[in-house]
Amino acid sequence: MAAQAKAIRVAVVGVGLVGSEFVSQLLALPTELFRLVSLSTSRATRFSADGLAVNATNWRSALDSAATPTILSALLGELKEIAKSGDKVVLVDNTSADNVAKMYPQFLSAGINVITPNKKAFSADQSLYDDIVKSSISSGARFLNESTVGAGLPIISTLKDLVATGDTVSLIYAFGT
Image (cartoon, rainbow, N blue to C red; front, side, top):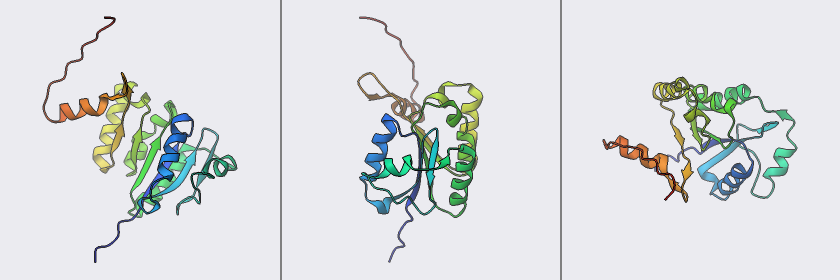
């Protein structure tokens, strides 16, 4: 009999329009696939290493009643402890905040995977991007980002796939028709 895989631990930062939809979709999935361990706004965080006792109808009120202020370094510490125990941990950043993006190298170094539509880390100083890549390579944690443009076409992942397979990519700008 094969051993059952442990559920992925998921921490969500940012529950505005995009983040709320993400949380709703996440909570519609079978719970054996993941444990939602943290929900954070810019003001408050609700955290439980064993998984938050929330569902699709009560997660917002549970977060609204959270008394713990959001301190990203504290969240990093909590998630780092979970990752040290051998569990897979994913930080989903649904913000457009610079301060969260600047911490990606620290999360990645701690073995925490990062998934985000936040463009700040990938359009800031080259040094931040270099630190993200270096941290990912050294720890084995992955970072995945996606933006959509032009009728929702997934541009970034497509470009990454093309480059990874050896294709040469040129950007052509067309203004007006």
